[in-house]
Each structure stands twice: as C-alpha cells, then as structure tokens.
Image 1: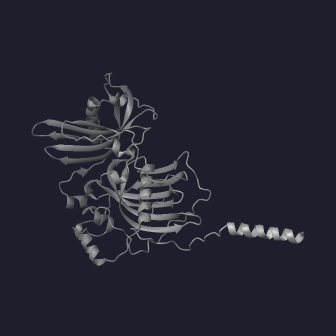
Image 2: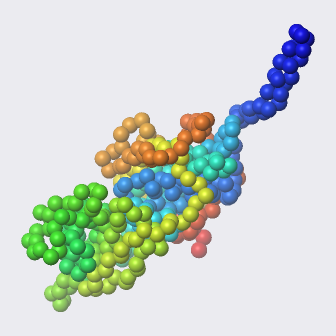
Image 3: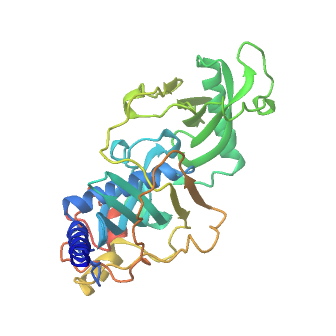
Length: 406
C-alpha cells in the first residue's frame, strides 16, 4: 500500500512539473533592435499616440525620426521599449485629439522641436500597449536662425502681450457674430502669436475658446463678463485669427477660423468640415463623433506619468555656416542624448505640463512588466538613428546636427 501511494504521489509531481514550463530568464543586457524594425516603428507610433492623448496643453507632436531604441523582453510575454524620438509640433491642438499622422507639420519658422524619451510596454499576444512614462524637452526655432533662412517670415511674439489678446478678442467677435452656435464663446488663452509688416502691421494669433452661459439671442456688451458653462456641458474650441491694418487704405481686415470640440465626443479627422479662410471671412469647423482609426491595441495598466517642457530658444550662434563647420569636423559623431528634465522626481517648470492619467475601466495584467531605469547608453544598432519621416531643410540641421541633402 505504501509503495502504491508513493508511486501515485511521484506520478502527480512529475505531471505537475511537466505541465509548468520553466520560466524564461530575462536577458542580462538590453537588446538593440534596428530603428527601422516593424515592431520598433509600431512602438514609436503607439508611444507618441499616448503622449499626445495624455496632454492637455500645446500641440500634437509628430515623429521626425527614431533616434534610439533599447528593448527588454519580458519573462512571460511582451517587451518594454526604451525610445528616444525626435519630434516636431503640428498645427493640431491637443484638444482636437487627432492622430499625429493626420496632422500637418508646422512650417519650420513657427515650429517647436525637440526629443521625447518614452518607456512603453507592448504585449502582442494580449494586445496591450501601455505607456509607462515619458519626458519631452522642446524648444522653438531660434529667431536668429529664422532670420537667416527666412528673413520675410513673421516674427514670433509673446502670446500674453495685450496686443495679441486684443487680436484674439477682435477675431473671436467676428466668429460670435457669424457662427450658428447657441451661446457666445470667450477667449480662454492665446497659444501662439506672431507679427509681420504687410501693408501695415499684421498680427496673427492662435487661441483656445470656451463656451459661455450667454445666449446669442441676447445682446451682450462685454463677452468677458459671461460665465463659462460647466465642464460637463461646455464646448471648447481652437481658433486662428488675424487683424491686418492697411496704412494706405486706413482699413482693418479681420479673419477667423475655428474648430469646435465636444467634451463628450471623440474628435477625428473624418468629422472635420474643412473651409478656406480668407479676408473678411469667418469659418467654423464642427467636430463630430466619428470612429477613430482602429488600432489592434487597447490602453491598459491604467497609469501614465510624464511631462512636456517648452524651453526658451537656444542662445547658441546657430547658422548654416556653423552647422557646416561642425559637420565637417564631426562627420561620424554619435547623437547626443537630450538634457535630463526629471519629470518624475520634481514638479515641472511653470511653462511645462505634467499629466498623471488614471483611465477608468482598464485591466491590469496579473504579472506586470519589469520597468528598468532609462538606459544611459544609446542603441548599439548601426541603423540608429533612423531615417527622417519628412526632410525639412530648416529643421533637419537643428534636430540632427547635419545639413539636409537637397
């Protein structure tokens, strides 16, 4: 009897061992996949989507190129990717919730450029893509550099200056008068501003608007006195306006173009009604709820932490001549890591933004990924940095330190 029981227990232990495969050990070093690998391209796309989705201020960022990637395969399934991405901003405000691939990259003289570090976990079998952390360090193109390559371009101004707020209020008054909205909108904040001498002083602004409680059927002397609607009911919008003064004709020309977003409905490119903007024209693009571009991945794990900081323009003497000199001296140099901005350990500067996102209803794997500190060493692959997604002869030297081949 004892012999029979021993045999039975031994058989059960053997079957149990056979049914449980041995755990795969994690590699001791990070892998360096190629920057043009399909999985890496997908990781960069998903990371940038989630960075843009998490933000509440600024403009949608677009991928310029993949600078570096390290991969950490996980014990069960999936991999954690450590990405460094060169990025440029677009003409889409983050409120639009557009996909970065569908947004128009800004003209170089108005662009903000820089780098984002991102840690993203991707589990193909379970269709999980979770952005763990991100840090973006951005800055405008230096004014001196713009003057050299585009002397006739408008000059950026400070959005908080009274003359730009006045431009926004004047152009929004035109929108309020001609739109079919039921309530008046007021200026929330000016996000971009520039000035150019055309036939007189011309001021250009981009600004966010919010719906107020004042009905359009009732006369309102000062829109700024109207109280905004509650966040659950209010619509937000994004406008581009201008006021051009003609010294010869003593005439003022106002233009305005706005997109209105619903707080409850997702916004996609398919729902936008495009109109052309011209002198003395007012246009409004209504954002409707249409299905977004489908992705096989869903957002999981619930929490993303990161920040985007806009730094002042570089004070270095940047010119095509100096970039050419630098290129000749350091033809084979390795790219430089972005400056550390420590988003997770210290609060952002006043001009930065920090996002902590807890998305309701999301699932968390039984075994989470192992997240290591961001690696100090760049990719060891000869394919990194990757090819630029679009070559801009003004931005390319600033992002890569090399002149673009035209």
